[in-house]
Image 1 (cartoon, rainbow, N blue to C red):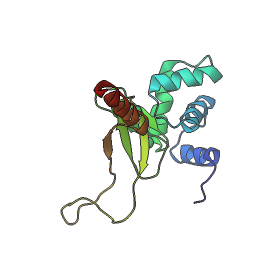
Image 2 (image 1 turned 135 degrees about the horizontal axis):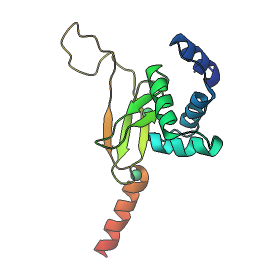
Image 3 (image 1 turned 45 degrees about the horizontal axis):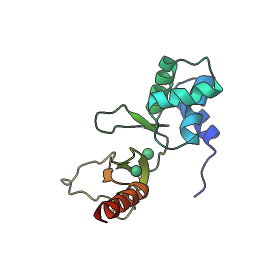
Length: 151
Ligand SMILES: [Zn+2]
Ligand SMILES: [Zn+2]
């Protein structure tokens, strides 16, 4: 699949939504694209600060809000924890690991138009799928500790 370079998409989407392209917003967006581990606002702040030490947490919050408003990023909420941010705009679900707290993107197979038994004429605009379990690493660790306690 041919994708537009992120920078071009960014410029276009920002101006479509009447937002100015600021250096700070670009830094925040770059951080989201660089490491797709669904960071919280504070984690984004720490990463942006490495490149732009003068940035404040409030600015990072504002930038994240703007990016979410423009549809360049999505907010992901895990239980009552702080919101995390995801720049993946493809239809996907999130897998939450109960062991290490990692959040992974899970692509959704586009088989049918709807996997849900919705009443006829319902318009589905968005689906949010949350999957919970253990990532391969945590699952292996659990197995090894089980085996150890047995012997
Ligand atoms: Zn995601
Ligand atoms: Zn894990």
